[in-house]
Image (cartoon, rainbow, N blue to C red; front, side, top):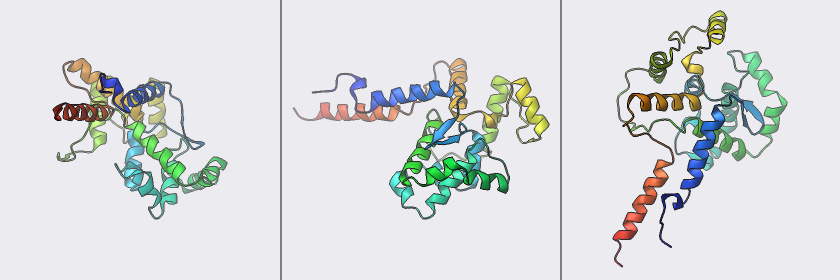
Length: 228
């Protein structure tokens, strides 16, 4: 039976439903879970720490089988879990206590493909509203700077995100103006979309599900061109 509606394209309706669920759930401010281990919603700061740790969970297209076959993937899992933990801080003692905790020990007893898949999904959902990149443009400053400038201009968030003094963090919390690097990515990308729509209502927005839609339209066009 020929496809008569874009919602009939395989996987499209489920992808849109997932996008809407991820966006709505992000607004509740709840912790996230990875195989029973509590995690903070992913932020720009988490992304940078994972990048500095050369975490493979930031790589696109590698997939669960590729990661499971990677030597040392167990260490990669533990490192990622510690970085995104609400208990994270630059302390070896705190890290050791976290790794000895019961939820982490239970997670590491699971087949390794389960936490690997859960972490990939955690990262994928965090970037669900991220703009597409062509991978070819030059970069003249860190992504953190771009985020800080946008959030400062649009929402008045502080630019001194490098100041990590506890008193400064308390003032940020008290005034309701957190460091832009600590805004969950699921919220941050939605804020950027909303602000850009306000400034440029004619601009085209991007959804992760658009690729499924584009592939479905392309397949339908090819089918229509085929000889009858």
